[in-house]
Length: 177
Image 1: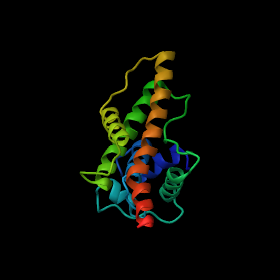
Image 2 (image 1 turned 120 degrees about the vertical axis):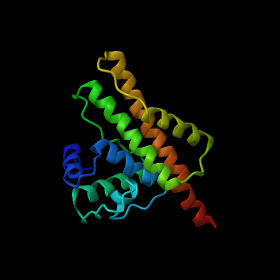
Image 3 (image 1 turned 45 degrees about the vertical axis):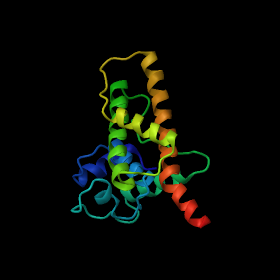
Image 4 (image 1 turned 30 degrees about the horizontal axis):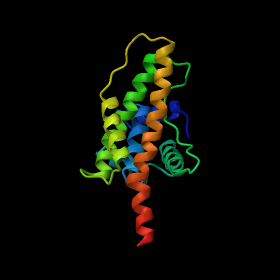
């Protein structure tokens, strides 16, 4: 996975208007919803046909490849692209909410209006929608740190569940038929 700072710089250089966390969330939402991760993924996940395709091997291409591999990892190695633990709580929680906002938007684009969700998947998606509308608070304590860690883990597992419902499930059903 490329460093967050490299993805941030690539997003700014392309004029994408998304933070690295939100862009990663959008990419993961697109992939989890069953979208294809080709070189034109920024145009697809951001719903902007004017965006140029990414070059093979550049930062955004490496982000796509690493994210797709992590989502497919049977050892659940998927990670959210968020600021380091040393960053202020307000920055990290804001990035998590941005990540969720990107995920929910692109997931909807890829999965459509009626995705094939399990009951748990539907619940997880509703939770991600709620998180996407949250705003960070300026102050926090150790309890807030622990809560943020729990929310991050929940989001990570929710994404894997949704990816299983909408991307892996249809592929496996297709192989069986």
